[in-house]
Each structure stands twice: as C-alpha cells, then as structure tokens.
Amino acid sequence: MHFIPEALDTYVVNHTEKEPELLEQLTRETYQKILQPRMLSGPYQGRVLSMLSKLINPKNILEIGTYTGYSALCIAEGMRKDGELHTIDINEELEDFQRKYFDLSPYGHQIHQHIGNATEIIPNLAMKFDLVFIDADKPNYPTYFDIIIDKMNPGGVILSDNVLWSGKVIEDIKKDDLSTKALLSYNKMLVDDNRIETVLLPIRDGLTISRVL
Image (cartoon, rainbow, N blue to C red; front, side, top):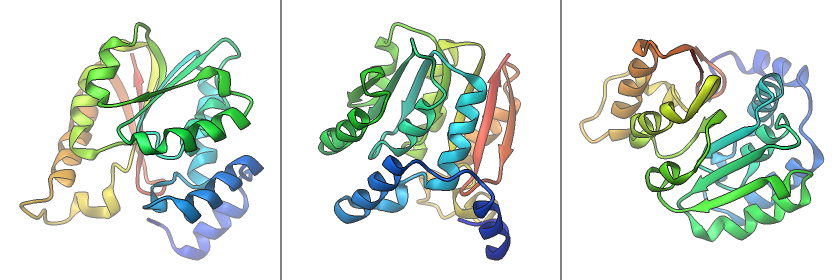
C-alpha cells in the first residue's frame, strides 16, 4: 500500500539503505514456495524496522507473527549481543523455513521460535521486553496489547504493523469486517492509553510506534 505518489515512493526507496543479501534470498524463496508472499515486510519497511531496532538497541525482543522470518531478521539487527528474540507464529508448517534463514544469519542462536497461540505463549515467557513487533491476526491486536503492556520495560517500544489496513480505517465498514473494526479500536486504544506515547506513521500499510513511559 502506497500513501504517496509512486514516483515519490520510488525516490524514497532508492535513497534508503539496501536490504542484506540474505533477506533478498529469503524474499525470493518466499515468493517461490509460500502462500501469500505479500505478507512479507519488504525491503523498505524492513530497513525501517532495522533502523528502529538499532536506535533502541534492545536486549529482549518479542515478535507476534513470524511468517517466513523476514521481519525477525530485520529487528534482530539492533539486538544486543547478549539479547534474545522470541518470535511466535500459529503456522507450524513454516517453522523449518524460518529456522533455515535464522541459522544462516549471525543471530540464529539468539532467535527462539514458538509455535501456537500467542495469547497462551506470551504469559509463560519469564522476561520483560525492550521491543515488541505486532504483525499477526488483526482482531487480536487489542488482546495482544493488553497481554504485553505489563511485560514491557520502561522506555520499551511496541511497533504495530498494518494499522491503516489499506485505508479501510477511514472508509465505511462492512458488517463482517472484523479486522478493520479491531484496528479502529486498537488505534484509539493506543492514542488514549496514558501508559504510552504513540506516533502513527503512514509507512507502507501503517506502522505505529508506541513508547512505554
């Protein structure tokens, strides 16, 4: 989803750091072998995630929604050498694909995969987080926030993807559109919560940065 003219978007991409070769390989194989390859973060957003992680320099990272591992590898780039990244996905069929690329990266030994329902897995993770990236099923975004907010370190950052949902958040909502309804509630929840400060960026399909006070 582009919210600026295509020519200007191309200029932005051309003047942004290029993705590492390993991520290019991951993208190619995802498009060759995996359903719904549009779910990849992509090179531009990936560089945004990488830069944010490097600025935060997190020790403990949580990702909700792994898919083929692209975004996990991006946010791992800013992780401390003694850090851990815990990534959760419901689809067990992608586990080996993810692991292959994690192990090809410098961060493989620091990345821990969890397969199953994030609402059940997160409460059992005995740590607090400096960085969380939410990119999973939209109807559960408010639930994920409620679960993770008390597991954040002060100054920690929650990144939420797809919060503009192809612009549907400002359109008339269809009765059966649970995802858009959930995102509307979620976006309002973030801006109203006095435990965090929030900025919504029109990057790709919308990316919210929420800093824990």
